[in-house]
Length: 128
Image 1 (tube, rainbow, N blue to C red):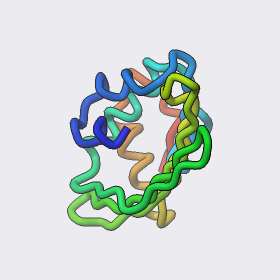
Image 2 (cartoon, one colour):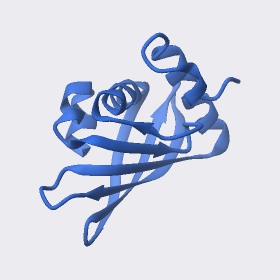
Image 3 (cartoon, one colour):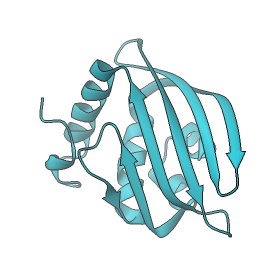
Image 4 (spheres, rainbow, N blue to C red):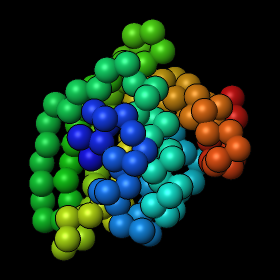
């Protein structure tokens, strides 16, 4: 997943996900389900970041916990934690991504809504 963010490509995310992957995030109003939909969201999200650095990683069984720092929107700092649950083949079944602070998360959600208009229903995102 960290390599997919570095590539900033929706296709790169697809290789990491099961076909029925579920994405939960603080920037979403409800989970996004299925590889194609999740790839679109993750691909769009990756290009919003101006910088993204994974600073800590912990693995506990099928779960990987990634702490990260990023900037977007002209240097706005965003921090967060991503929790990945993987199957026996190493593909991601579930991803939970938590952005902070709230103002940055809401702005990020609204930006995703704009960038994914016509591809993902707008009600998945903050209506601001």
